[in-house]
Length: 324
Image (tube, one colour):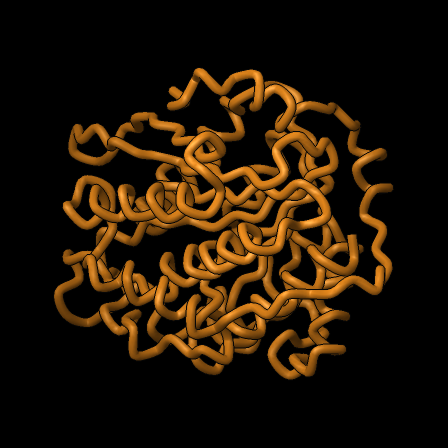
């Protein structure tokens, strides 16, 4: 269900429009507008990451998950206004007969603007450290894999409050992304799948979406993820071009990365919204090329780097304020 159903007329405006795939691709055109771009604060984004990590693991069913849901709703409401923040609550079948209580969180900026984009991340953390050598059944801290993407979106929400963006922007935090056991894709991406199959109002057609996943780790590299190049190559190339202009070309490397199943694949396949994934990985590493701390207890606050958060945030603010 969607909370705040009394604001359905606002949602109808927010989620109106129904461009076809060809029309949406034509809307992926970018040019410098000469607008002033507000400063993205890496210190603020880091604080948002830290506040999530300090709660503890945020895996579904945990106390940390319940507390973080309240925290994210409260933060988004303080920036977007209570009437522009919506929680999509749903249940999903877990393992061993468990029923998961999950929540997607949506914050709308410029809700009456029909021309929109979508920025998203997941906010849950993994319930097991299956890539660790100890305590593999215990949940991970999820500083990078969970908190970093949400932290960047919270800082963008703060910026949007003080500096309204020139177009409509929807920030979406998906739940249940990292629940599944390795190899069981049916138990991954629970939030994005539910949101895509049950959009708040039919016809949601933003220009594009950008997914952030593991965007805060020290020494991060962001190659051009393969599915993203299939779904929205113009958007990928624009972001990476901005990175080069802003001095982050060594981090946003101009080479093809791996094909990574993530929330963006679900959104593209179900709704046809051209959505890309900014995700840390290296095609030179084994497997998917994720960082050594991936799905281990070492994914903690110590590996978060403000320089990485700054790079991702500055590229996105330049895109939103000066290229659309």
